[in-house]
Amino acid sequence: MHYVLACVRPKEGQKATEVFTWTGVDYAPGAGLLAVTGYIGVCPYSTIVLDFFCPLQPQPPGALA
Image 1 (cartoon, one colour):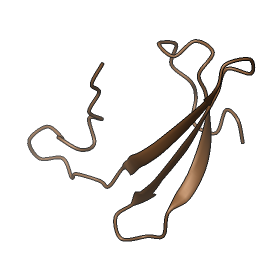
Image 2 (image 1 turned 180 degrees about the vertical axis):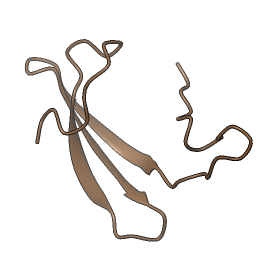
Image 3 (image 1 turned 120 degrees about the vertical axis):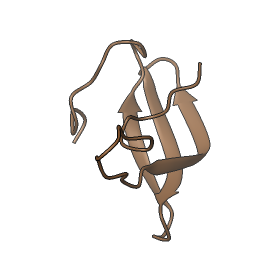
């Protein structure tokens, strides 16, 4: 599946924003968690953890925070 956020290709008159670019992924199947390494723009690399138990179910921002 390929997903491009609307903020990357905004509608006419809207401003584009930077997004988190994935460079590596580790999956913990028992926990349903995905650890994603990447970066935003020219910022340092970081790792975020995503709930991947139901990957097609939308998650609110900061759900695992």
